[in-house]
Amino acid sequence: MTVLGGSGRRVRLLASCAILAALVPAVALGTGSDANYEGAVVERVESDRQVALTFDEPFGTETRPILRILDRAGAESTFFGVGRELRAHPELAQAVVGRGHEIGNHSWNHREMAKTPRPGRSMRRTQRAAIAAVGITPSLFRPPLGTAGEDVVRTANRQGMTVVKWSVAATEWFLGPDQIVEHVTRDLEPGDIVMFHQVPHARDALPRILAYIEDQGWEATTVSGLLAGDG
Picture 1 (cartoon, one colour):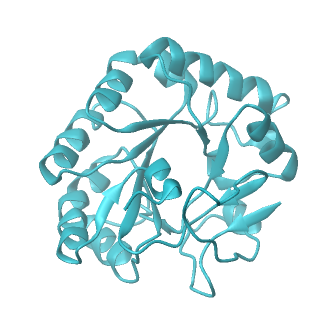
Picture 2: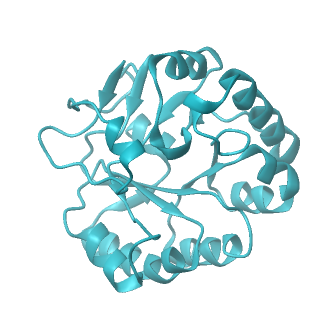
């Protein structure tokens, strides 16, 4: 398994032992259609001006306010949905896609893949939930807690998905909005994949982070946009 990320730059991840234990050294990767992501775990992609914004679960009361903030900034993002939430809240998934954002697969019930007896089934159920909700089959998979062994990567690949982690985490569980803004923007660079959750602190920090991205002359895009090198 290869992790595609930065070239010697510090990777800022959630302060979770489970996630830290899953890290492996990152290597640099260019953008464009010649890039091969098969069997890879993508953390960041070299880019001149694009930053990928991502939001993990939970779909709920914060989803629409976050969408409105993204709309006002003209920003695009990828929302990684848990299958049972996509099934319970198809209208929120429809709002995400209807506003030009992207839906990714985040497993059926957010259980760590190593503790899931049949990870392939978890992925498939979520794919079906996404198809039922928005008529789209996700091409990206983010493993819960960011942990994915080679077997999980291969399983996702066989289902037509690239495994996506992140290079910058908002760490909303530990930081307030002001701290999140400082933490995310401190070393942010084009090519980074930023992970938020759909929670109040992320919502409150988001306008200032988007303003920072705009001030730098960068573009906030989806993971697929970053991988394609559209910017």
